[in-house]
Structures are given as structure tokens and as C-alpha cells.
Image 1 (cartoon, helix red, strand yellow):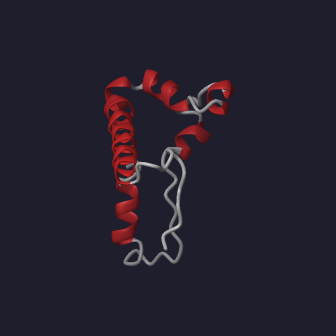
Image 2 (tube, helix red, strand yellow; image 1 turned 45 degrees about the horizontal axis):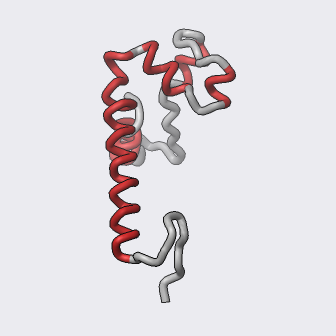
Length: 99
């Protein structure tokens, strides 16, 4: 089911299923069983596990990683530009407390 679908399902059905504690584990069991290989350790350490997964399953993951990441970075850039325009003397990354 994967995130965010499994999180939505848990929120909707967790209580009616009689669960007092719920946990979405995603693909954890696929990795533990050895059905799906993990990325090499160096890729995990450097934050590139997503690239390994994309190469393994490009048809399923291209939209999530390529398009989704571009949209994410565009939103960050847009937010930064709006903040800079509304606070021209403030440097990017500098936050002022609201008074």
C-alpha cells in the first residue's frame, strides 16, 4: 500500500479494527525477507537510496522521485522568493521572531 495511502487507511480504519497501536511499515518486510534488495551501504549513507530504488523500478517510481522532487523544490523556491519579497532586508535562511 505504501505511504501516504497506508497512513490514510490506518487513520480511517485503525480504531474500527480494534487496534490500540498502529504502525505503517511500508516495504520493511520486503527488505527483511530479501524479496527486494537494499541499496548498497554507501548509497544509504549518502542519501541516495531513492536513486537505487528508481533504477530498480523506474515505471513505478519515476513520478514520485523525478516529478515529485521537482514540485517539492519548486515549492521551496517559491516560498523563499515570497518571504524575501515580503522581507527585503532579511537574508535567506534567517528567521525573525514575530512580535
